Image 1 (cartoon, rainbow, N blue to C red):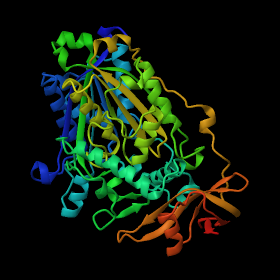
Image 2: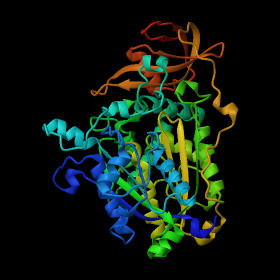
Image 3: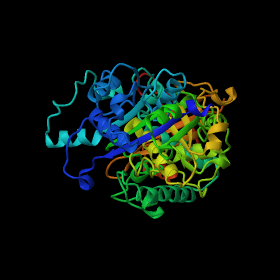
Image 4: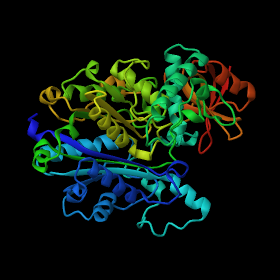
Length: 506
């Protein structure tokens, strides 16, 4: 990759509007916060008018407000002229994919100054509803946010899964965590202790992050001790282990080539190059996976990104592994071949549960924070991953300011595939009957911390897979929460129609 054509990040900006920490409450729409973040990014580059000179405007789709064309709204607010506009399909992987799209535009000389931004105003919308504040001053919203959430993409679960309560990521990712624990042959207590230490480590980073929604260091015990302030949501995740989506946050990036940065007189020490990246897919819905304890797509994207950068995992100084739930971090670490106690940072922000999980836009914050750390000489190579939907979409990128690393990189951003055998799951049966065993599971709780239902992925003795509810009895819940549920045997009876399948423990 020729140095002069190498895409470099020259400015980053982040915004947090949390009333308890940042002044009086104000309901600011996502696009307006994007403008604020881009203003900070332009000033960070040393050229306050830089964002208004962009010929590429890219956005991350917000969940809080269903703009018809977010890039066009942002471009209009910035007052920029004609140019390229782009917004990837929604998902936590989309900031990394957006960066890669802009990189290609810079490398092909289709754009000279690219501005990338995302923001979330879920907290503002909640507070506005609670305080009866009108949002008529926000930009028009032709589509309700719920219709905008998966825009242009299939639902994240199949009708069979949806019939059994698997509707949102908070319902799905606990399945993966329980499978990881069983695969690693840990007891429930031992595995929860591992998760507590991981979350505590992330919170220590968040406590030092000026943009973190919860800038508070917590002990491992605080994460694993269940009580009124840390109730169960879906076993094995108490509330504090879940990404916090009710935030008002924004982040932005300004990107250009080395040659353009030279022409504009941007100081070399402000530049961080994008060395490479990659994207990959896992099966789209959970039930289609071959197994639940690893992510072949995550591993494929991560290792391809490093390959494109001409680096190995040992060359990385700073990681930000996507962390909507602990299992996402475990998948990423496993795919990279590193341990959860690796001495290098696994998050530069503090993660989605502490720093904040602003819808699809978290990875923009991770990229911005990585750039800032590289500039402060806390490392010369950074790795950022993103994950979308039900853990089905993956993207990764590698950043550096090391001239030798830049010279060795190819700068490409391919879409790669995991081994085909890893992407083929068992046959699915809609209305199963007969003996079966639990392949993975979760238990859902109400706000009074009482178990209300168990949701199971089950494997019939003939190898086929299905979904079922477990028994809603205290004794049955206890067997799943207090003892390992993966592998327990029982009898399936079919539901049919809109009725769920049922699984009774032997």
